Amino acid sequence: MARNRKFYLFIAFGIGFTALIYEIYITRILFLFIIETSHALTIAISAFLAGLAFSSLAISKIVKTDDNRENERIIFWLELVVAGYAWFILRRYDLIPAVIDGLKPLLNSQFLIQAIKLSFFWLYLFIPALFIGGCFPLVNGLYLKNKDENTRDTGLVYFFDTIGSVFGAFTAGFILMPYFGLETTVLIALSTNICLAVIITKNRRVKIILLFIIISIIGYSLYNMRATQDNSPTLKDYPSLANKFGKILFREQSPFGLITVGQKIVNDKISKRLFINYRAMCGTDINESEIKISTLTAHEIPINSRVLNIGLGCGFTAREIAGSNKIKWLDIAEINPVVAHASRLHFSDENNNVLNMPKTQLTIVDGFEFLRETKNTYDAIIVDVEEFSIIYSSPMYTKDFFELAKQKMRTGGIFALWAYSTNDQSQKVIYNTLKSVFENVVPRYVDDFFIFLASDKKISPRTMSPEEAKKINTMLQNPVKDINTIDNRIIEKYYDIRLNLQLPRDYTEQFLR
Image 1: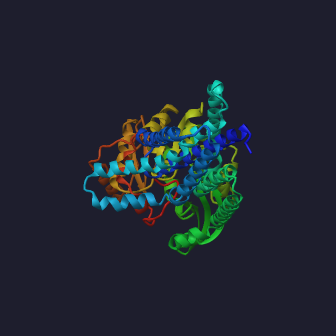
Image 2 (image 1 turned 90 degrees about the vertical axis):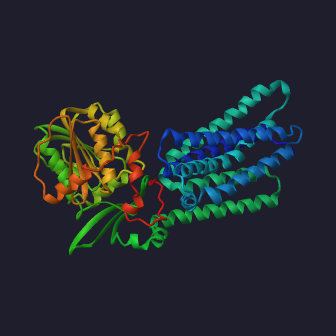
Image 3 (image 1 turned 90 degrees about the horizontal axis):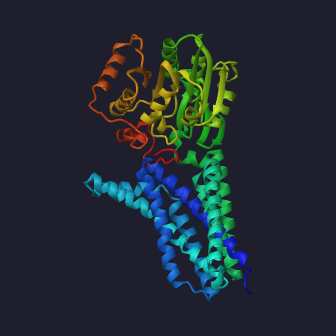
C-alpha cells in the first residue's frame, strides 16, 4: 500500500532532528580536547558539511525514482548504520584521547601529531554525517509526485529537514546535554534513528526486533541516569577520589556536573567541602585565599563602593567583601544554580548568610555574559571561579575578558583574580595577560594559590613573608612571554589539568578539555 506523502515529510524532520543532535554533541566532544578557536570550529563545521555533501552526491546517483521500496530500504539501513556508529564510537568519546596518546610515541614531530589529531577529529564527525546526508535525496525522491512540481516539493522537503535540524540543535544544546549529560544525549539520538528505521520498514518481525532494541536502550539510559544520581558507577570507577567526600550531605546533578557537599575530619576538625564531580571547589578548611583576595581588594577601594564577585562557590569571598564597611552594594554572578542552592543549604552559617544580606544580589548567569550586559560600573571586580582549563571558566582568564572588565570599572578600579596554582609558566602567562591590559599588576601567593590584583592606579604595597616573596619572584623571572586570548588560549600549553588536580590519566569529564 502506498504511503501518504506527509509520511516522508515526517521522516525528513526526524533525519534533520538527529543530524543536529549529533552535530552539537560532537562539537562539544571536540571542545573537550581542542581549544575553542576558529580552527576547531572549522574542523567541526567542514567535516559535518562534507559528510552531508558527499553522501548526498553518492546517493543521488543511485536513487530510483520509480522504486519506492528500494529507496526506503536504503534509508532503513542508513539509519541503522548511524545508530550503530553512535553506539560503538560516538558514545565512547574516551576513545579519542586513547588513540591520540597511542600515536604520540610513534611520532617525533609536534606538527605531525597535531595534524593527525585534527584529521582524526575531522573523520570522527565526517563518518556519521556521511550516512545522514544520503537520506535527504532519498526522502526527496520518495516525496516527489511529478516533474512539474519538483521545485516546490523539494523546497518543502528541505524545509522539514531544516526545521528538524533547528529543533534538534535546541533540544541538544538547551535540554539534553545540560540536564541529562553527554551519554544520554547520544542515546536519544541513536534511539530516534532506530525509531525512524522501525517506521520505514514494513517487515513486522524486524519492527519487533528493533522495538526491543529501543526498549533496551531506554532501559539502559534510565538505569545509567539513576546510577549517576546515586553516584554508584562513578564511585566504583574512582574509589580513591570518592574518598574525598566523606559523609555526603548534599548531592544533585547540575548543568555543569554533579554537585556534592561532603563532611569529614581534616586535621582534627570537621570540614565541609563543595565538589563539582571530584574536584573540590571550596571548603570551610580551605578558604584562606578567598579571605585574602577580599581583604586585599577592600583595602584598595573607596567608601560606598559597588563590587562584582564572579563565582559564588561556598560564599566565602562574598562574605568577606560584603563584610567590609566600604561596600555599599555587592553583585554576585554564579553560573551554576545548584552551587547556589548548595551554598544556601549548607554554608549559610559559615558565609554569614551573605545571600540574604540587604546589600547583596545573586544572579544565576555566566560571569562573562553578566559583565557584557550589565550597565553598572564597579569599583572592584573579583573573579573567583574554577581553574583555567574548565570550559566555562577558561574565557575569564583571557585578555578579551580583562579588557571587558576594565571597561566596566570606575576610574582607579581594582580587578582581582584568583588562580589555581599550577606552575610558573601558566601563572606567568596570567601575569603577562593582565599586564597587557592594566598598568599595574601585583601577584600574591596565599595558601598555595596565586592571587592577582590589577589596576591602572598604583596598588598599595603590602608586607609578605620571605617564602611568599620568593615564590612570586621565581614566577616573575620565568622567561615565558605569551599572552592568553580567547582565540589562542596558550595558557593550556603549560598546564595538565589531570596532573595538577591529581586526577587519574583516564579521568574524563565533559567540562575538562
